[in-house]
Length: 289
Ligand code: NAP
Image (cartoon, rainbow, N blue to C red):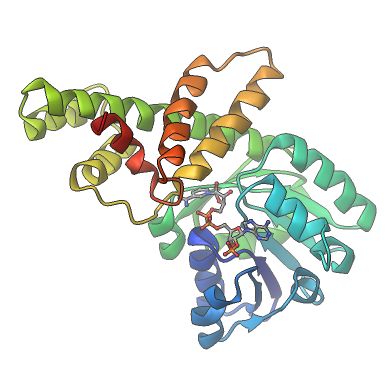
């Protein structure tokens, strides 16, 4: 397989995705603002580009996996940005969790340039990115998705086409709204259990086996109990997702009051210096109060 792929952004998720592209035999060029993060990938055979523009020059498929709207805008449209250097006919895949508003603007710019944009944010976290077991939530044209599928396949367990461009971004925000609210209420519930005199292990066993049980509750409660805050999902990114979700839902005249409440817990954790830890650390300010 020789198709040329570029990936922009080698954080928690982009690094795992890039490793799977290399393993599958794609010719891969990587770009990351902080160059040091590319070292394991260049050792494994990727080319490192000093700018986004240089990274995409020969790429048929370009994936970005960046923090937020601002990062995506910088990398695609900023100085030495990727879009201006993109080959006509290339497929652009925005896999970052970004706002549907930015996706719409980006899609118009891409089209003007002669390239198709897919919004393809993912569910799954660090482990699923490393194992090539992500789920892609895709918006965009059938033809673009068909062309991108061989590339998406090696990073994923499923690819769901939800509709026109922007559909993936919308679905991802709904998904993370429910995740963020659940993590925040778990933090309060667990802090309450710890102060209540109940046996914590027994209480969590009941919650996990009962109606509130979910994969997220099981995974995050274990991290909260052991105070393991190495990053699978950065706390500050969940704050961003809840804010984007609130803005997007408000355009459908839905006021996400539970997102507002959850976001205030995450904001408090950021004020206490936990923004660059895992989102499970949102429990600490509640525990320490
Ligand atoms: P991360 O580890 O924080 O990586 C963020 C990436 O964005 C890094 O490559 C960072 O570069 C880059 N970046 C940030 N601001 C930038 C700017 N202004 N200009 C250029 N590059 C910039 O985040 P992640 O966990 O990989 O997440 C990436 C995206 O996927 C986010 O939108 C996140 O919400 C979403 N997501 C994450 C998970 C998860 O479990 N972690 C799951 C699903 C979706 P530097 O290395 O130089 O900082």
